[in-house]
Image 1 (tube, one colour):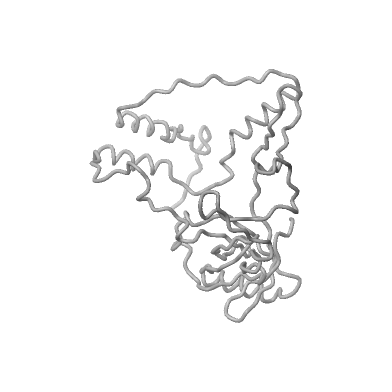
Image 2 (image 1 turned 45 degrees about the horizontal axis):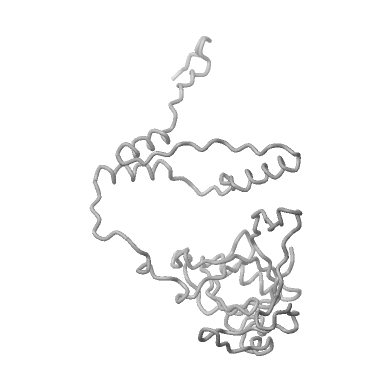
Length: 276
């Protein structure tokens, strides 16, 4: 794994040196834009509209548009001086229960390993979080982006989940056409709850896969081999108006299949006599 960041976790006056690694990877299949006529990939050019010429990276800085067409400019060192990243610190401020955090807050997961020194402090923090069942709420800055973070344990490893600040979460009041005082048919509600119960079970992530990615890779291999890409015909869709019929059909589809009763062991043989 590639080390993304080096620093320390702090809680109270305790510092735990750590290295950070990405816990997830993007498996999306990357496509490039190609010029149809000659098959050449299209390149993107950094060009100034006013000067009408290409611009080198050395000539580029960052700016904030406070009014249309008006910018305040910042040099790299100015932005770095504002960032807490120079402290290289994941500062735990509070410990809370995991169920207190709505999943909407979670952003990206990182694994944290012990640094070159301080493995004892790492083990102490790991075991104390394990035994208390709590997670730490911390502040951290990665690549000049300040974020809240949740510190928790995954398979004997300290993990950090970046989480959004509250003002980054949009209110549901902005969502149009939400139901108000909706009336629900009790029979439909009972059947919907039965369907949920039938589909309920433990979370088994290995049972899910990216069907689109698999189909796209198959199509890529077919094209490499010079074969025609075959697409399965789309199934006709119907707009089901009768909710009761749809719920009943769904329940019928997920009902466990009846299995024939197994023959008792020793069938066809003389049963042994038992003495009471």
